[in-house]
Amino acid sequence: MNDVLRERLRDVPTRPGCYLMRDRRGVIIYVGKAKNLRRRVLSYFRPGADLAPKVRSMVNTVADLEWMCVKNEAEALLTEASLIKQYKPHFNILMRDDKRYLALRADPDDPFPRFATCRIVRDDGALYFGPFPSSPVVRAAKDFVEKHYGLRGCDALVPDEETHRHCHADVIRFCAAPCEGKISVAEYRARFDEACAFLRGERPAVIAGLVEAMKDAAAREDFAKAARLRDTVAALREMTKSHFVRRRPEETRDAARRGLAELAAALKLEKPPRVIECADISNLFGTHSVASMVVAVDGLPDRRFYRHFRIETVEGADDPRSMAEVVRRRYGPESTLAAKSPRADLFICDGGITQLRAARAAFAEIGVTDIPVVGLAERMEIIVTDDERGDVFLPRDSQGLFVATRLRDEAHRFAITYHRNLRERTIRESALDEVQGIGPAKKTALLRRFHSIYGIARADEKEIAAVAGVGPEIAAAVKRIAVAAGGEKA
Image (cartoon, rainbow, N blue to C red; front, side, top):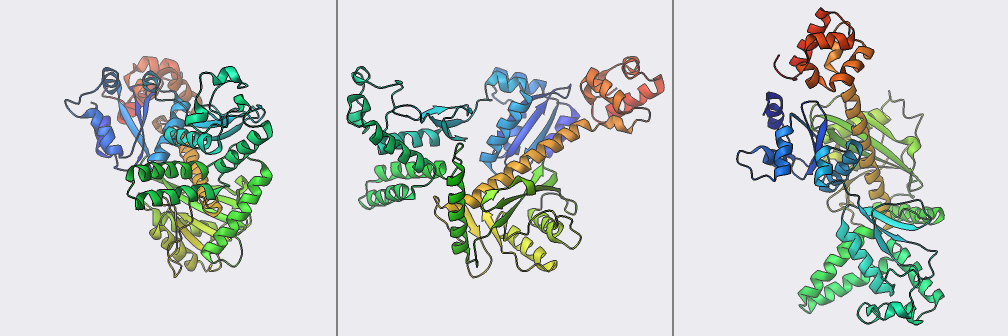
């Protein structure tokens, strides 16, 4: 283990996030995720660790390490997938960690449409629900809609009597058996349409019925059935609250309007909030803080007004003070954003009571008193207030909660994109900028030839001079800077 890696390991945080391992050339060789970064990363380097041969080979190749902190384990999973697809690290491909997430697909043009799982969402006119990080959620939803709505699960293009000879789904899975002519095309289509409406979150009564059945089973002390129903309800709530990819625009607008009305009623606002802003604070590689601000107009995300911020007045990971800075920079007297973005009718802080209080204090400090401010606590999806309203619990299938959580998820996604851009910018920046006589063209030539500072530190001064087209003094300076930047000893 070199000194650079040993120093990095001392600073790994205990938060959820992703870690990136590099070899001596500076090339990313592995991307991983963890609920606790420190525990996971250190497990690779403990003396006597029982590692698989491929993992041991990877660890022996690691020369440097960096990490990215995120909000939770689910976000770490999504970030990991994005980074793997972007960089295609050798050991991820070797260990097959770069699979896509699962979605549900149905072709409405089939005579008897059915739901199937898939890992690629195509622009082929089919209906897609997802993708979702959790495969069990998708499979549970597919199983439920097939049984509840009597839809077929067979893979025949057009089911017929021959298909039914080897199938008992009509007996054990409540299939409507279109292959036997037990249901007309129109009746089957009506069931399919109802199943799609359920997956879009438009049939909350179905889940409410399952909840009642779960309570009834628990009251009768049939705890096994109650536990099964509990798990089914949790999966269906996760599936139906989320994102229908091929949703018709008019349905989306109607649902958004209902959601705004629900939010206004739950938060006791005078009218539905036409413009909602949501701010999210994130840390980059455990050190730099950034913020994203996304906007919904009439309940739908409007990317024209998205903004991101580099936190300037706060050192380290201090989300409340960072949130206060965002408020001041958005609405303060010196802000240039007031003329560029519509004024919010509701401001949502991604986080709990501390972020909310910091934001409200910042609004009061700059004299803005007419914008309602709430927090959105992620773990239980609770809307947080710090007044007589208390915490606001909306049903999981509520359109109001969907409007708020979708905007929060957009803020997370926008922050991750900003992180990636900053990281790429950091990669482009180089210690070589400190050397007089090395401009962008020479720096590019050196990095193209030697791949990284590590490669330059190991190179011969004559080779450096030849590649950059400089004299021996500048080549020696380049070598010294590369070694000092952590390449290796000269």
